Image (cartoon, rainbow, N blue to C red; front, side, top):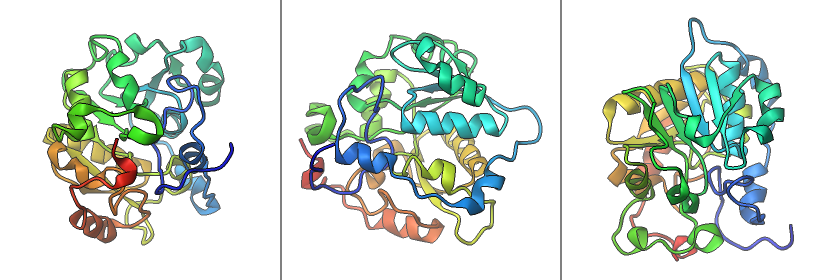
Length: 273
């Protein structure tokens, strides 16, 4: 991969490595793929939920999209997964997980939850009406981050108008989003889930304006094996953007709450365009 540039830890969502981004991003990819194996959780990880699962659409089949597909299907949810290259390129993931490979236009159909996990720069290129056909109360999860120097280029609405990354994404999707998983290492989705009440259980910050959708996403994250902390609305989601104390933090509820409170709204130099 060559010499890694020196900038801060880059958790999941740093890149849509694969369909939306063909070049490798040295430090971003290396950290996103870094595994922290923990055999203690593997048996619990694969416990299926009781009762029928939700219909979930995942747009983006890179590290985060792939690992959410693995976990959510193992829990008994009905998952449709899409990438920009077409469903025929997702055969291996489908065979591994039982998920249904679909086109991007089909991913949200009937879905109660849609996960959008592609590079931020690719958001405007999503098909118009990509969320058409989703359930009326669909919760849309945005896992992404803005990396102007490392991948996305400068986005004026974010840099000059002061929009948070997820507010910018909302405007392009035409639908409210819930920001989650953006500061979590992709491999931790597989390796670090624990039952509710476990002393070492990780907590993830979750931001969004739609309280019902936020509650649905927090319940799903709990089912995946992680606690959550309400990080406020989408205009408050700068508290969990790259360069903040919570970004990449493997902590519990108290640590995550403290880190969110200590965040500064000013972007660090490494994450300004």
